[in-house]
Image (cartoon, rainbow, N blue to C red; front, side, top):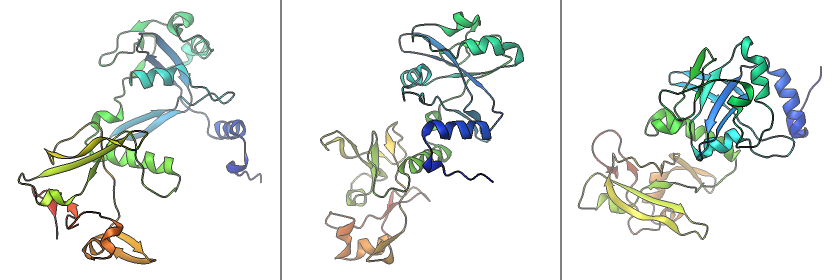
Length: 272
């Protein structure tokens, strides 16, 4: 039996082994559009359905292995995050293969391959009229305030972390816990802070002006374990915050007595 360790293989070798081992694969015939209005049509075999409730399909416009450059599909999606997934049949194979060639970005593969544009119902990129099935997936962020989206994003982030330790700060504002929440004259507040610039200064200073049900497109939630280790001893983080000496490990405020957001009822924070 042949045994391979992927960590010992080059990128092109990983791709060759994996794409031949996991086969056959369906084709995502993806149509996208740039901010200038240039349409791109390209096939991707890194594609499949991952869930029905919620319905999730994923395709990967991965970088070119030969030179690590990005494909026009990915460039377009980063500009306008919309894509039509056209499902192809045997009668379209020859035309589809023409769209896999490397054309300049301004070239329209619909024209090159002889396909017909059909206006999509909900998004900007056109559909392939000849395709018997066309999917107009909604980007995950459209349901950004749902538990499912938060969980999916958490899985993505943890995968990117690759077991590395430490907190992550990115292009978002953190929802934080501060003692002002339990002392502010206005009840049911949420505290947000962050979105650091390269010099470390936050775009969003500490702010508690929003009610706790307010959802912002750039809010980020960090899930925190109740159990932390202090000198290799497991402790509840609330017990740490209650300890006059240990609390400085987690908090630089005067009281450090705001422990959590209460999701059970309308009370904003809890010191229980």
